[in-house]
Length: 298
Image (cartoon, rainbow, N blue to C red):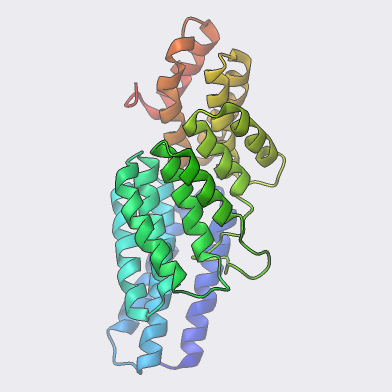
């Protein structure tokens, strides 16, 4: 196998990431991703020149991260974690610390979403150390910092959270990301900042950041996250109208996309509604969430 075949594989990987970014239902992409991983695995089993082998390992790490993203969206966290572990192994073999750091960051996000922040922290510390040794022209270290900010928020450390957000905000526009395994360009910072402040209970800071985020072009899944956080602000302020308006929109998104990420956000929101359940409208909302995503968080 030579450079031409590697180039074709690179183009296909890039195309799969592009399709993933715009696909309303991410799970539909799993079969073609698995098929391409089979092709790459078969290629790696054949004798190759050292540079070709490294390139194939990098492509494999890239695609295992995409497979992990698809499984993460389907709420299949164990399978996603396995893909991220394989991605990290392949990235190490490829000799790409940035690719490796991104695989670790994605793996850590599973613990963040499950609110196991003490487990996420050391993995992100390792990813940050790798990113510092990586390509300074890439946004790897800024993306890791954004993930660390969410972890610090979960651990209740406002100062460390703000420091990490400041580091993430240093990302330079332009070609700091590749649109595939590294897609951080700073555009997500308002919503990430808002999510952090909601977790920390700083509602004034949260609402300002989330309002800024809601006025930008967001993917369906990201918009659902912003709306869920705005609903959470409404819960804290006992503003039933705000809770209902935003949560109804998230329910509609969950029904439309079947996204496990959106479903989990609703599941996490449901127990927060308890203080407001004397209102019949909240009772209706609670029932709709339960019917859609179950009552595991109740």
